[in-house]
Amino acid sequence: MTGGVEERDQSVSLDLLKQKMANFAKERDWDQFHSPRNLLLALVGEVGELSEIFQWKGEVPKGLPDWKEEEKVHLGEELSDVLLYLVRLSDICGIDLGKAALRKVELNAIKYPASKKNFNTSNGTALTG
Image 1 (cartoon, rainbow, N blue to C red):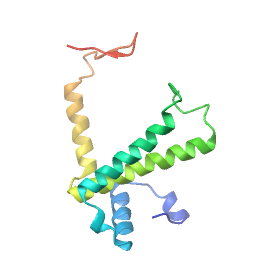
Image 2: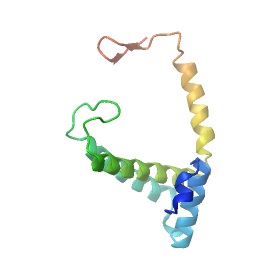
Image 3: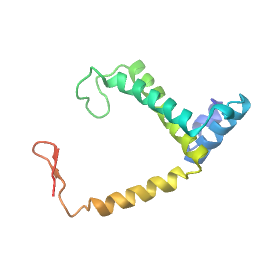
Image 4: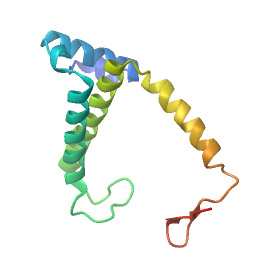
């Protein structure tokens, strides 16, 4: 799954990740274990590991300025685990994740139009109709 410098320098797309995950599973004969349910449960476990990183830190400023480099590396690893399981799950379910995500952004733009204020900036709470 990890490759040489050439792979790290190229642009990363969901299709590239999907193909790498499919190859990774096939090379190890793991397709038999990659049912939607199993992948979802693995994804939830990884979200839990990601949550543990933030569990006792309180609010964290954007860019993580006070974090050590090894903490940022660990965060990147856990975020990657979540992304890779999500990409694999969508592939196994036959969902084009990129198209689904773009559609969801469009639906959210309709549901939450920019012209309508939906957030109280003074206290950080969502406004209700």
